[in-house]
Length: 259
Ligand SMILES: NC(=O)c1ccc[n+]([C@@H]2O[C@H](COP(=O)([O-])OP(=O)(O)OC[C@H]3O[C@@H](n4cnc5c(N)ncnc54)[C@H](OP(=O)(O)O)[C@@H]3O)[C@@H](O)[C@H]2O)c1
Image (cartoon, rainbow, N blue to C red; front, top):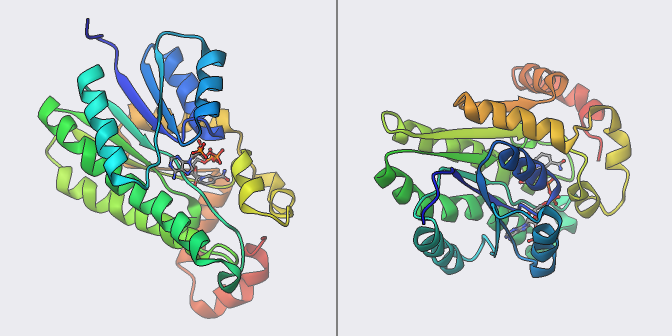
């Protein structure tokens, strides 16, 4: 029998932020579908949560055919998608010329193609159901780019603009778009992205906890906020920095480049 509970999809739901989002939505009484590429991690999540409202699906968001098959499965199995978190993401923090073409392609395909493929697949279902919410997890790096993150910043800047354009197109419908722009979060992402291992140390005083970040995101989604960014200190610094002339930005380079 179809459930009355909201259906929440979280790509990259085995990761630090995805798991925190899943925990909050389960507490709110929602059904959650978690995706990742790793069957082992998905089984571990299933065993850990041990709850009939948690479902898992193996999915590579860069594979458009797999995304379409996933959407068809959701349609048959649940017949709805109330909230879609485009959360799966990756980064390689290296000087641009040290990045392999595979690193570059994986970053752009996961962070940008992924949300675009997912949105293309799920938006028609939301529109025909008369409502839904798409949450794109970008980054403050999409506002202010720094060294060793040119490609990552480009992918997240594109997600911010994609969210803006989509929101304009969907104005007047009951499908909402929230773009999330966090600063550094204390998840395995940082260790994978930064092989040198100094970034986590250098940004330690700004590090967000996944649980607090997820709480702020869910609050913004519930309030249908178009954008949410955190922490306050970095949000403020980013906004001030963006308005500065290039000459002052050059002078500030040692302050903002921490990788
Ligand atoms: N941590 C930070 O400092 C930070 C800051 C700002 C924004 N963000 C953004 O927040 C989001 C979540 O990051 P996190 O910190 O939770 O990272 P995380 O712990 O590394 O988790 C990333 C998740 O994405 C999944 N994933 C990666 N590539 C995928 C692909 N091609 N297809 C499907 N799933 C894929 C991973 O699962 P599998 O590898 O098993 O597939 C994992 O579940 C990302 O979009 C990230 O860019 C993170």
